[in-house]
Length: 416
Image (cartoon, rainbow, N blue to C red; front, top):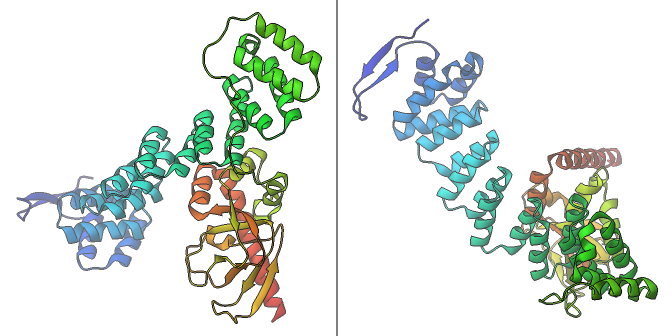
């Protein structure tokens, strides 16, 4: 069946429009402001009217374009809504709709057009365009996001260097470990991680890593810088004979120009410590994460220190993210006033702020450091970037989060 068309002489200079069928019915409903009814009718007629309505939106007035876009959005046809919003030059709405449709490349273009650099970068990254994302993260002056984008893009050595400039030792280490998992014989990754281990006193681990690397990478036996590092590790563990054999091999190689791998002790803040990862892994919402997902989550954490009396969370302020206590104690108060009622005291292994990871809203309690406190912190923004890059992990996290929240509601209901 072929639709009939009428010629309409309007402000666009004239155009042909269908003279009957669902397109006209929907256009008439939209013109009357019946968005909900039009959306329901569109859902029932299927996608047959989609192209006709988009053609209408491409030439109609601004108000009509916007109304058609709203109708598409109400009907959950986000891709069509995004295109209609574009026709109306509403780039912010178009970008959000493209994201809902899973078209992250188009979303990135729209976000960039309306000046939302960080949102554009995140969308480019989700579209697999790491270089474009990195350029925008750097333009926005966000080195933390740049480092994470490098890690998520599998550029582990660059990520490690970026984390090093941020003095984020544990993220640097986790990036190097992730790289070696992907490429066990990578000399550059192994050398950097071995040097870090030596610099922080983990001599046995350094010797084991470097020795294992020689089995995966035959080229290691001819790499002067690597051998010098291996000899230092073996010597530090008391294996003088092994160190002597490596040094003998080193002397047989041509001299290499350039700085040695180990250039002295790195001045850097201490890593969160051996228990921090265990505390993170023990949180109920992360209980089902696989090893690689768990390590990636640990990498986005930062270590923060608060002196006694400092406020971690203030009443009414937007939630920043998840705080996991690795040292010291905090007190949770019902309000902002000095005399507010004490609700709870949390120590090592305790956590708070998890709701802010999934809900953007003001906090309802004040949290103050009772003593000097160290926390492993995951910001809301870092968590969202993490789950975007790990959809399987995101599903497990949200399932567990929903389960735990439902259990809390059940307990509270039973207590009434």
